[in-house]
Image (cartoon, rainbow, N blue to C red; front, side, top):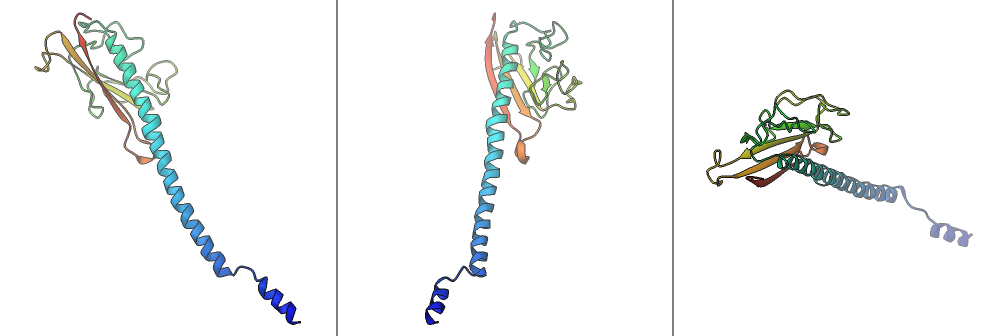
Amino acid sequence: MGAAVTRMRGEQGTTIIEVIVASALLVTLMAGLMAMSSLAISTTENQGHLGARVTEYAQDKMEQLLSLDYGNAITDTRSFPAGTSGGSGLTPGGSYNVDSPVALYVDYLDVNGNLCGTTGAACAAPSGTTPPSGWFYERAWKIDDSTTDATLPANLKRITVGAATTRGFGGATRATSYLTVLKSSPF
């Protein structure tokens, strides 16, 4: 009978205290990993995806503006294809500050990058600087020349485009991008 008692003591299982301690350690480690995972997802979405998209949309606007003749003062680049009148063309003015855009120097895109007010867009056309409901991306631009900035020589314009999202993913700061180029006359 003594051998049976010895065998039972050697085959003892894990106590409830050991199970609770092990479970507490596992839960603590998992909570840390979840927090890190959440931060990684938010950073990837804001810095990777949204940051790349706003830069792409700023570049699209810049290319549209650069395609205009140097002296163009009427083309409406708030539509695509650009309207032949009713816009500011490359007239000096505007603001690249996406928080305080200037009429005729701002447009809005939906979450899929469609220009608001166009076929297939999930947002209506804006009214001046009032964003339409359903917009997700904003593009604002500023044109400077020697009449608005004395540091610029004659026959040279500086075009700056700012693009931003309406909000950041996960409560983060919204993604914003700025591009600046110089355009010379007569090109």
